[in-house]
Length: 440
Image (tube, rainbow, N blue to C red; front, side):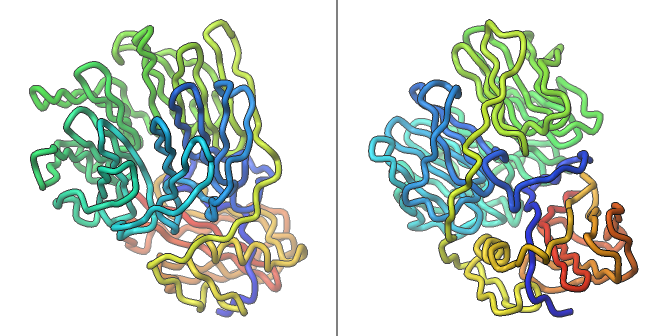
């Protein structure tokens, strides 16, 4: 199969969203797709998927772009220190920004993997979790990095958290690991077979939000793990603590925001049901929630309803930096485009595709298997091909499809390993691509 041009409708983050209603979404993300929220000293930062970083000096009421020097717009994670901010990106490693000058620069010395999923800081150490490359530590505020211990293998790390002298890493399907200052080996402390999406310190305990299996509480003193919130298929993507009231808030993706004032024994819904809440942040007098597709919401303590605070509708034009991860030019990225990284190839395809060469919509439509739903602009013969991370075609399915109808292609019965895949849909001169992660 030869692809001349492609058009990216939506590139998903590692956890594919559960079934959503069809809507017109910005190509390859945009300022409404909030991947991470962070705060320091009253300043709030928002990382987006496709539009870089935004900053708010009034606790989320208004936002301005913070893009100077940031040449990769696809942000997975942020870490805010007293006078610096770090951003983990898709394919370009870590960028560092001085909060006074507000100018970004790459800071990848010693970093072996340039896909950075999560960042965390405690005391004088910053930890960066990468795509199957392990955890890297920095003792100089992100200037230089070194590999932090062994024992993680090829685990995909979704979350990272630093507490006292320990670092916790939440993985895909391999549970949670712990690393101490005095050790060189990561220790698996439980939840084997589960994916841990967020980690939060509450008093002397550590809370672990999982994919489909609810919330667990870990006690470092006695190494005890207790489930404090049942699963029921919910994805607990983010959590935050308001120390003033000892209230725990968690984001349950499309279920909304939930709160507990009794250390997780009981929970109440705080709203935003139906919104795909991706990141949540607690400040002294309010909660801020970043959503996947609908911007930022905030709710002050005195408010009874959430208020939407959309970011600038115009994403910046950026070019991703070169990475050590190789991306072949064919067959996935053929047709005169010479990609430098996976992220830059996606954006180059986006700009290369003429307006007429668009499949109407495409998205991952299952949270458990590789299932892609799409709609065509024109009826005709369609090819749906699955590629691995390196760009190698694994499976191709063909058939006839009618325009305007939602069609579904399922790759779940082909014995695939968990990991990141690309799905390309082509019909005549129309093309579209999306990226999904298969987590068993």
